[in-house]
Length: 111
Image 1 (cartoon, helix red, strand yellow):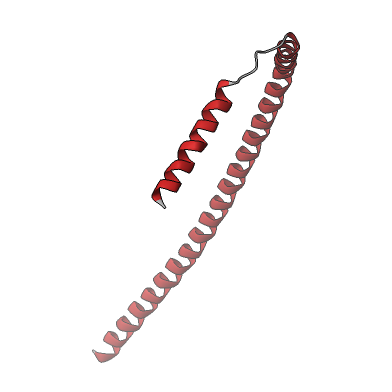
Image 2 (spheres, rainbow, N blue to C red; image 1 turned 180 degrees about the horizontal axis):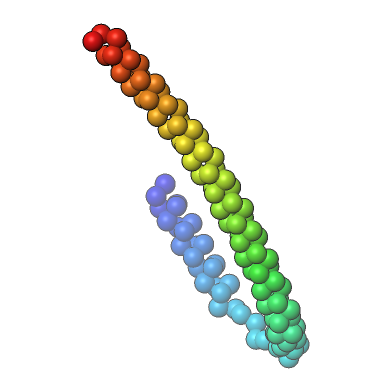
């Protein structure tokens, strides 16, 4: 079994080498086609670069807008949290004053 697998691998390798060694010489027509393709690619390069630059600018503008929106939202949430904290602090101070007054009144009545 191993000999059969080894023989098949050798045969495949030999066929592959034989196929690779037979490369056709480029013809004038092939060279002309390659030159035309290169010129076409060179002609399209500035348009492709401009398109890429436009997409990059649009992406940067969108990212800037998203950042600005997130900043505004964070500022609003921070202000709301500050307002809520301030209200809680006011309630706590009012409660402390009330308890202090109650303690003072009780002390006065106990005298």
